[in-house]
Amino acid sequence: MAHAPLVEQNGESDTYFLFSPSASYPQPFACLIDRRGRVAHAWSSSIDQPTPESEPPTYLRGWNHVELGPDGSLYAMVPLHALLKLRPDSSLEWRAELPVHHDLTLHPSGDIYVLTEEPRTVPGPGGGRVLLDNTITILSSSGEIRATHSLYDLLTTHPVMKALIDKEADRRAAEAGPTDPAAYSPDGRRGREVSRLLRDLPGSPCDVLHANTVEILRTHPKYLWGEGDVLISLRNLDLIAVLDLAARAVRWFWGPGELSGQHQPSARPGGTVLVFDNGQAHGRSRILEIDPSTDQVVWQYTANPPHSLFSAMAGGCEELPGGTILVSDAQGGRGIELTREGRTIWAVRISTVKSLTARTSRAEFYRMAPVPAATAALLGDVDGTARDLAASRVRCELREDLPLTLRSSL
Image (cartoon, rainbow, N blue to C red; front, top):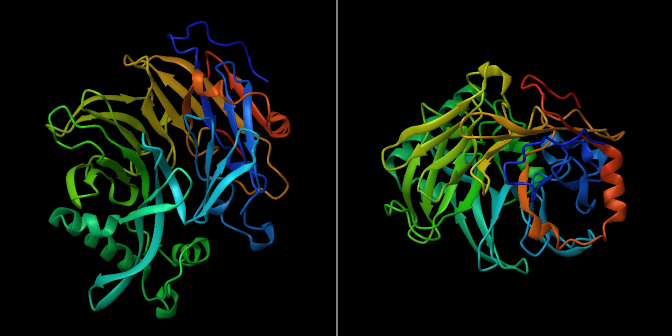
């Protein structure tokens, strides 16, 4: 299953890692692995999966993203259809039918902030145009909707944001060319069927924002933002921003001209922001740290050679408690732990045996998330069937010499 672990553990031997393989459809599962690459726990459920006969595109298959709650519950996103809360034994605690996608985060109160998608008509040259608005939906701990916040409505209160959105919408509309007007009529519908229809239009003219991250923030040390504001990432605008949902205001933004298709910005305690710059336009990915008080890059990591770390889509990075950085190289199928000096001290390569109905995916997994040992200990030994499934399908290769140029083929 795995090779011997690296000798150097950097004080983080109590960290586990959670991910859901993209090739696990139509019986998606999530794996929790330890530092030796062993499957410590797994969850599996086919609830709400589209049928293979409907030939869903890869972005509608399986689970888009998974998160583990502090009580050991798994939150699994059935893309653009539902959020599932699963118990450690994979049984369903609750289900919220919502067009969820990409990311969610848990508030200390127990509320869940999740990204959702809403087709809508917005003003455009010569009349209205259809846009896939991204929203932040806030759910109670029992899955009931508390509030919904439109990112389009909030962002367009800021003149620079509005100009960026209008420019991208105009560019996409021009590239798409003439299209049957009937294709642009969502008629109040939402969910994976209508979103698939709109994304399948030539040039995907409606997908202007493409939010992929939401994080709840603490007050910035220099008060650039306040308690409870949210950090978001808008992939198709090459932009990260901090929003005050209550005041409907943009507190800070950065990225155009610097970022290219980025994922997973996260705020550090000292007030700086880490972000995984996918580098779609440059053929290389890098990790950046930005000081929002100056808008300057204060640290970055680029592989040597630069193209040896390149995930054109998905992926991410976040700081671990010991100060190292976990990098999710989603298309390479790797989780990599880096020091600030740029040394790779731990790396695992994930590969998944495809099911008969699986398509070749664009990434091995969406993102890898660290899980504290104290949370992993809550899970117990109640997942035999799911763990056997995961262990039979997933291979974790752990080596000191795992090359940065390694890519997986699914």
